[in-house]
Amino acid sequence: MPDLLVSLYSTKLAELKQKADDVGASIRPALPPELHLVVGWVRERFSENWASEVSVAFSRQPVACLISVESGKLLGFACYDTTARGFFGPTGVAPEARGKGIGLALFSACLQSMKTLGHAYAFIGDAGPVDFYAKTAGAIVIPAPDRGIYEGMLRSAPK
Image 1 (cartoon, one colour):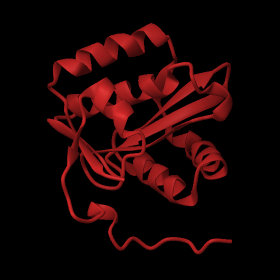
Image 2 (cartoon, rainbow, N blue to C red; image 1 turned 135 degrees about the vertical axis):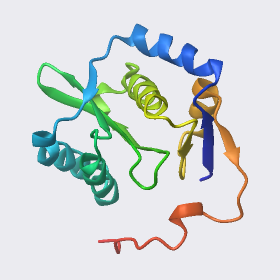
Image 3 (tube, one colour; image 1 turned 120 degrees about the vertical axis):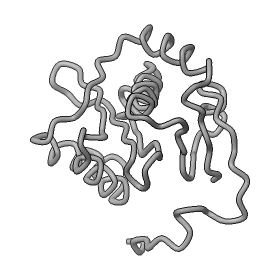
Image 4 (cartoon, rainbow, N blue to C red; image 1 turned 90 degrees about the vertical axis):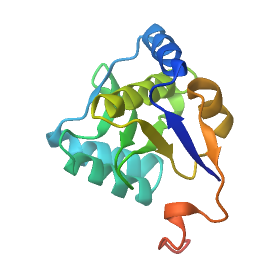
């Protein structure tokens, strides 16, 4: 999967923010006392690697993990500045909450946070849904012959 680049000064970001606002999802920064809950939720639904990255997001000031919560239930998360400064991700939405625009709202909120913190661009490493990122934020593929920052990363052995 390729790495992507998103300009945080693109007109696509204003369009993305409008679409995200229309979703009406409740998005907020995670609070430090929620670390164990969010990390456990991510580990259970996604992966140990993503749980590690979420832990890093909680070590940032401000916390670089945004969450979507409804009626006291965690529905999704998105992080930035975890694997490297300027990186967006990981991000995920609970299977039962997908298709409601929560992922889009989390993505938009993260990009807005990154821009506010002074980033001009966001990198999306090892991007999964390339077409989604290209369509919603104008992301472009970064041509590279390798896996970028993830090249040679240690991985858990399959169980």
